Length: 260
Image 1 (cartoon, rainbow, N blue to C red):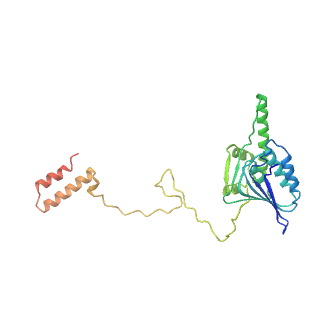
Image 2 (image 1 turned 90 degrees about the vertical axis):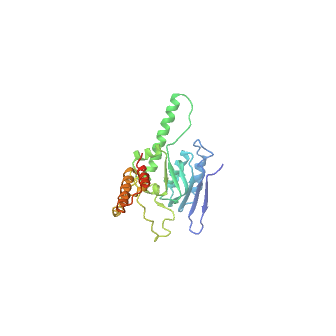
Image 3 (image 1 turned 30 degrees about the vertical axis):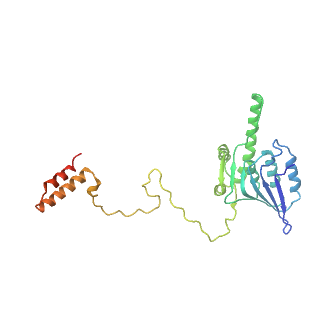
C-alpha cells in the first residue's frame, strides 16, 4: 500500500511532524477505509503535539474527512503548515489545525466535490444528492474555521476559488503566514495609489493636485494650423512694412502658405 504521509519524530521534545505530500488516498479513490485506518494507527503512536505539513492537490474526500476528524480529536496540539498547496480535499485537512499557517508563497483552493456515475436517471439523481450532502459536510469544516456564512462559502466553492496567503488569512482559512515575524522591525512599503482606468488624467485619490502651470505662449507657426499660419504671415508682413522693404517675390511666397 502506497502511503501519502510520512512521520518524523523529534525525540528531544516529543513533538512529531507529519508530512502530507501528493494526492490523498490515491490508491483508494473509492473511499476504502484501509488507508485512513492505517493513518489512525500511526497517529495513536504520536500522542504529543503534532505539526502537519501539507502540500497536496487533494484526493479522496472521505479519506480527508477521516483524517480531519482524527486530527481534531488528537489529544495534543495540532499545528498545520501549508508549505505548498492545500487544494480540494487537502484544504479540508488544513482546517483541522488548532493553528493553521501558510507559506507566503503557498496557495489554498476550494471547490465543489466531484464524482463519476453511470446508469439510468435515478442513478444520476442519487449521485447528485450524494454530492450535495458531501458539499454540506465540507462546508461544516470551512465555516467552523473561518466564521464565514455558509452561503458565501458555498458560492466560493461553486466558483472554484484560489486563495494566496494574504487572502486566505483575510478570510480566516488560516491563522497566520509563516516567517511573517522574522523581522518585526521591517515595515511594508506604502502602497502607491492606483490610477483610475476610466479617466487616466484624473489624479489618484489622496494625491495632491499639482500647481497650475502658467499660461503658455501660443505655439509657433510650425504647428501648421490655419489660424497660426495667418498670424505668422501678418506679423511678418507688418515687420516688412515697418522696415519699408517689401519684396514682391517674398510676399507671393508667404501668400502661398495660406492656400489649402
